[in-house]
Length: 221
Image (tube, rainbow, N blue to C red):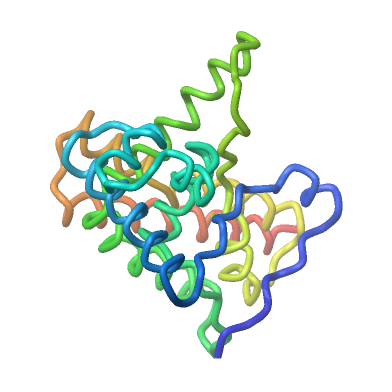
């Protein structure tokens, strides 16, 4: 059963404002056009390894630029939809009887196959975020920035059953957010040359090490 999104403390919610994907039309020509543009963007990233402009997506989709911009006014809106299509099933929050460690294991293990399938698209999202950070720092950013962070809500839900002091939970939450993303996947692949199986074993070892350390810390309080 799908649950409602977890409410975040006000102080944290002010920082936690990830970009939301534009809602896709449900039926008719608008729905098919939205899907065409999104599928084209997914394919361009897969084939060419770069984030396409909205104009490029329009040309490849054989639709007018004005039409494409109505669906995706910025690259941030486009890449948000790309990531949402790549990770959609992983972002469904479900209530179950598993303990916190089992929930954390489950979200990591369900995400690994999505990383394997959509690695170029997820790397492109990280690329856009870094590019826009540099442009914003230089005062040159001319589009709404792409803000990442859905993993915060996903991990918070997974950690709910774990009983530990708030400080220890927050530290664990932040630490797991470093591992739960394409960043750790890219580091272990690009720098260490790990294959998928060894990469996943390494990440899960780190996950368990962090949970164990947090549980021990909680018992000392």
